[in-house]
Amino acid sequence: MRNEMHVAFDVETTGLNYSTGHRIIEIGAVLISNGSILGQFSSLINPNKKISRNAQKIHKIKEEMLMDQPRPEEVYPKFEDFIKYSTLVAHNAPFDMAFLRQEFHLLHLDLNHPYVCTLDLSRRRFPHLANHKLSTVHRHLFGNQQNNFQAHRALDDARMVAAIWLAMEG
Figure 1 (cartoon, rainbow, N blue to C red):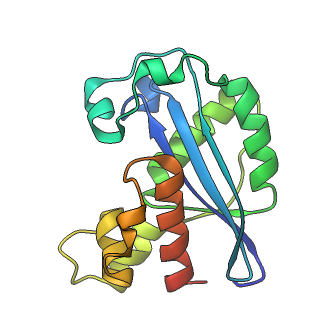
Figure 2 (cartoon, helix red, strand yellow; figure 1 turned 30 degrees about the vertical axis):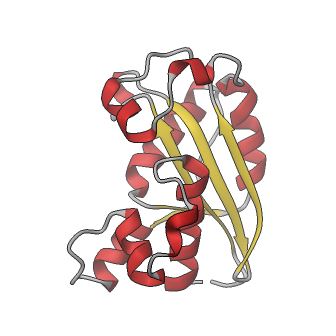
């Protein structure tokens, strides 16, 4: 696995369900190869959609923060280039992948990348943990080193996913 390219990524959204019109408003990603981080990608995205109160409480992203941010059609072609030939890695990957697939579909882009879910890996590897939240798994592996991370912001969550992936599989 060390010679493959992986991209650990995370998204923040306007709500929990892409099928009811919720959209991605932030994407963060870290490129991993040979056990090293080679680059990162991060963008707020203005999908011109309301952000649910519950989502705002989680990620603290307000609609005003998105006003002057790039539109999806500006961000996703660049992200597509960033993830080229990579296996994607996410914590609760089915959620992130569903949103990302929908965004790519809306722009007629293909997303056929294989993916790995660190949530599933952690449940198998650490069944004794009280829960398998991203912060819990990171704390289990690294102690309290996550104090430099801002939880529920895409790039910092992607960095945590990358660290977990490298510790478990990289």
